[in-house]
Length: 240
Image (cartoon, rainbow, N blue to C red; front, side):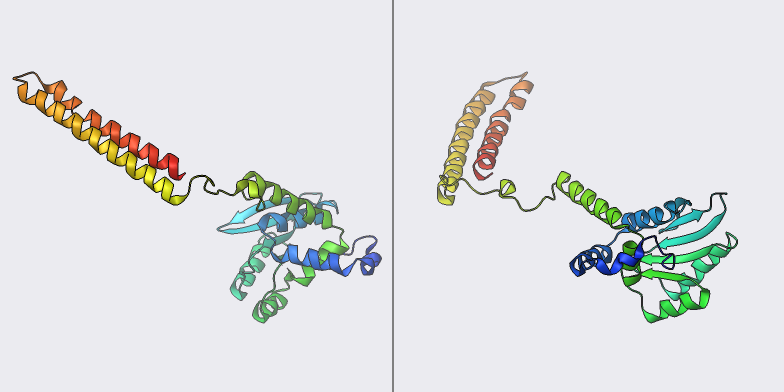
């Protein structure tokens, strides 16, 4: 992939270094979706068809020529987790499609053992600077920028917006901690007193009851539940 030049790539030297640094930073954290978007756009622009596929927990892009024949398989490896054993498996996978070539794609770098295994099996490592070069020469910056903008919009929609003060929760200025604690304590004491008085009244009635007091027994718990619920509501309302 990286050996395929794009038209007009003689202008690469005119790209500002700051733009390259920004692009490099974005690609170094590229996830599977961004890697797939870059790979697919690269091949689509050249008249090929692409299909995303999975094998186990790994994600791939299968490239077919206009006649529908597989010509390339790209393993999307955002965390650069590939090992020499994975490289051998990728070679076998590409061989299963006939004469298809294979590429490892990641925004990070691999260790020397992976590069050596890739050379041995004739597999390209589109990693780190190679990916930056490909995106620059093939004019795929807009793909990276569109993906980044989409991710930011999703973060805002999910509540992960930048730290705006509108989302900060602070206690009311006119309710110091001591005042709020006093209100809760006072409300709780009053609630207990009310419950005690209600319980005493119900107890007296139960003692005077000679039979058929099932409903009265059940009703005896209502004051307690109501007052506890009220106290809880007051506490939550004050401390919220």
